[in-house]
Length: 382
Ligand SMILES: Cc1ncc(COP(=O)(O)O)c(C=O)c1O
Image 1: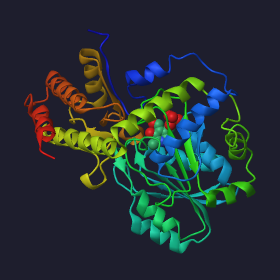
Image 2: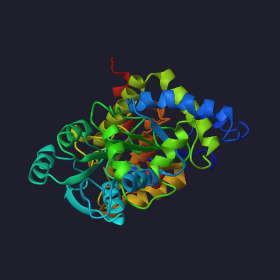
Image 3: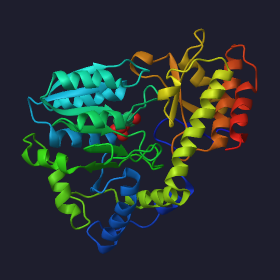
């Protein structure tokens, strides 16, 4: 049956029925009291997800627009910026800073590895004039989770701002924005927030505002001072995607009803079961256990079977979509998302389909071995 599809890529992710229903409501005017009420209600809830007392701005653009907003408002031409790179999205963040005239220094930890705090500490000790440090909470291209608390503690001792790409983590992986000294945290709607693409969410610390006020990069649509001015009236500077705001409110309600602790524990469990199943199938994981992402798992395809051929079988035969590799990992890995509206049965579908696709591609696989391992983990007493 071609209609039944299983979208298991790290964004966009499946949308829960309650969120879809909320987005079918008639559009309201964005300068109305109803919109102000909606905006305020979102704000109360999203601050809990961000664990911040600062304002969280909801911007109508994709995650990259949120990252560009962070850079455009804090980085002036000629500023020295340190970029911590663990994959494709770390590189993107660095490239945005370059586009705004920053002098970017990189520490590239390698694709599949996480940030090494000692290397960051050395770099910060040797250079005291960084204006910003860029990091990725959850590197989607490799399925690696970075130690944001650890980096934040190091950056907080300097004058630099700590800008964090939390696009594929926030909402599925705990982040303590204020406690971990994150000056700007950026995330997006189409990942763990269970919404269609189109919104970026971004918090700004007091330390960041002091820089923003003096920043002289050109900015208009991405201006945070403009966003703040409108936010004071529960408004937005330009026409927001009102429909996505309605969806966001419903998604946040779902997350808080489940309990954020439970949301985070669910993602960790799904990742653990996926990783154990992959090992039971004698396939190799890209990320080591200590830095394994709770929201996406990257797996090496068997050498004789290209990752993209395997993905084709999965999609065409079983309606299951995994993501491919990016950059240097293209054709080598596939990525299974367990992000947002995902549960135990999704993992069983993913692993069951993977076993069948491997068998079809001629890989010697013990059918059921991966599914069984995942089931065992799900049946463990907590
Ligand atoms: C970690 C990370 N950063 C940034 C982005 C870019 O977000 P968008 O595609 O919404 O512009 C993505 C998207 O996959 C991502 O996973």
